[in-house]
Image (cartoon, rainbow, N blue to C red; front, side):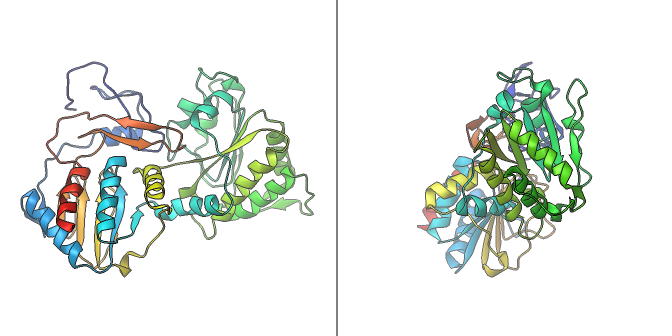
Length: 399
């Protein structure tokens, strides 16, 4: 890998998932990694050219043509939004110029959380609190590591925990099928409790668990194949915990009315806090979605929502981080601003390659627990413009 300087110890923050692990050694070879970070930092450095309908043009020509498309559109939309904080803020300003709504590529799953947060609120914790205090961790409908591969390594089995013995932690998996529970095995071999069920059964399962936490009797012996005795044992262990953490990943809860599961989890946390201590924690996160959700809310006073792409007559698709992720199909003119390694079956109306934060330029992201903002370092030389620079140039033409 080409880096900015020759060093045996170049540490960087990885934006490949919401954990934002800040101990990645990006020297050759990469260390302190997972499959996601290896994929991210191994992206080839491609100095692609801007193009209009597949024909290479100058940056000025591409930006000018993109601006003309947006000025002519009656209902444009800015979507994808895989970027860092400064990139999003610049894109937000451009979207405001043409009165375009904004939608992140993870909007469907993020909206499951947002609906609960808006209507009921919740009590959530941080990764540092998990590391230092959690003695019971309940993973609901997820194995976590499919989205955040180093979660257990960095936050559960970390020997530097301050107020609890990591080896003594109880790990419980409730719901889901074919989960990878291997990360829940402690370093000394203590096995997790695993109670699988179909994801679609989780609203019923979590409602039953919440009732048992509140000591409400249930007149059944099983719920979706899980015995009431097993659920009662989980409820009792949560009540006895010094600091229980209930974890979910909204992207894994992919079924109708999944927000009911999240609501049951968060209200179960409230019930536990009447006599003990417990917190929720939504994990997952990718492509700067946590950052975009927070920045959109503070800039507009509205949480970003889902939109039907087909109802818009022009689309700006922004994807700085993940060239492998597909772009939605639309008959409307599409302006793509993103990673230089993006591939297209049909050339978009305009393509403007930009720097990837954490590789080609520096940047800033919110971590998935929303507790801190972490800087992204430039880890290789690049002449690509940043998204913020491109959007600022476009702003001048949209005014």
